[in-house]
Length: 331
Ligand code: IPE
Ligand code: IPE
Ligand code: MG
Ligand code: MG
Ligand code: MG
Image (cartoon, rainbow, N blue to C red; front, side, top):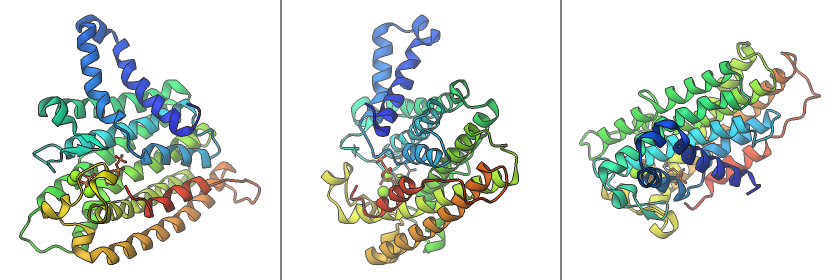
């Protein structure tokens, strides 16, 4: 598997299977127990998925002048996919959205039972932090790795994705009338936060690998712009997810269509209608692309030790295509 997508798959698998080599596993579990546990954890990961978040990390780091499949970048990217996959396993539980299908397969709790699905989610979340911190042994400085860990913890945690899921559930079937401001907050947190992490971790790791001084004002500005780029992209992404729930079949989506209406969720479609939601997603995508231009300028300054220059060539076209394609996706 030589493509970037293939390397991401390989890294995800190796990181999970690598856990079996830890002495705690070999000393305390039988080979059959280890195999069974790893199968439960790998199931939701290997069911597939678009891998948007790890791809974004790798492509942003590439635009900063690195190989997108640098081992440290791949570990950071895998960490984002582990957090995302855990969030889906828990999102599907009967106590949350109660979904039977995910990524074209029965959900983890349907196959392994609720308690095991809960544990598989927990394992993926904690393994994400193992993966991202291990980027320090794979070529990233300890300082840069720690900054990436901080971003992942902040955006997946209490005032990141979790806050969004909490607000989403509080709003479901709520009798309180809610508007765009409330929905924007939910979507920014439950989906935008992790995409913001994917992009800003790509910049931190990417610039660190190029020898940039991470405490400089230019790097801080670049990281802030990357986070804004990801959050705006994530908001557009979640609006499209709300639209697809209404317009696509379960077979195309790989998850049950029409769930949002049946669960009386507050969504972009319930608030703005399909056309209004599409217009908003398009507007946000244009916003994200404007931020991308500002980010490009700042990255060039960072790579040129703080001085503006026309001599440094950067290529953001893969990132731009990824963002644009999210708008026209059908799953
Ligand atoms: C689904 O995410 C949940 C949302 C945040 C909208 P994705 O649409 O990225 O799901 P996969 O990873 O491709 O399965
Ligand atoms: C989930 O949003 C966002 C997460 C943080 C997992 P949804 O509940 O809309 O995602 P789907 O439609 O089940 O994939
Ligand atoms: Mg949900
Ligand atoms: Mg859901
Ligand atoms: Mg949805």
